[in-house]
Amino acid sequence: MECKQEIIEDYAKKLKALGHPVRLKLLCLIAQHNDPCVSNLWQCIKQPQPVVSQHLSILKENGIVTAEAQSTKRSYSITDPFIKDIIDALLKEMAHK
Image 1 (cartoon, helix red, strand yellow):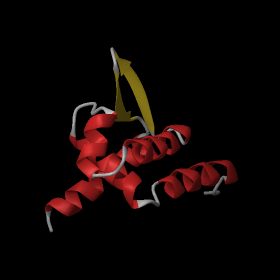
Image 2 (cartoon, one colour; image 1 turned 180 degrees about the vertical axis):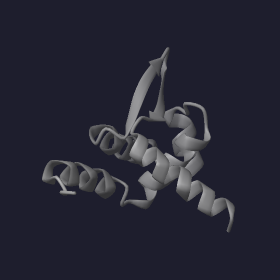
Image 3 (cartoon, one colour; image 1 turned 90 degrees about the vertical axis):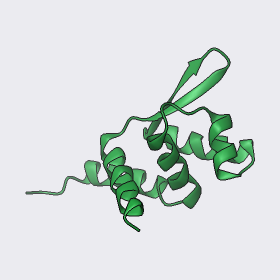
Image 4 (cartoon, one colour; image 1 turned 90 degrees about the horizontal axis):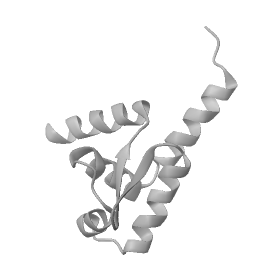
């Protein structure tokens, strides 16, 4: 089986986006809560709202999460199944430690 360069590059970009602890924490929180909004996220990880928004923007740009406007809030969900599997495995691992 051949490793297709285009696919490898796509996954490499997504994995690079996961390479920051704040983004991993955000994804864990998003996976654990039903469509959390930004205010919930920045309060949970104790980071300023602009910092959280910047990290969420990187996740959105890489097709990992989507934001849905709900009246005055934006809620986030993980849309990439590959990343969702990684985050689920990470949460499972943390539950056993």
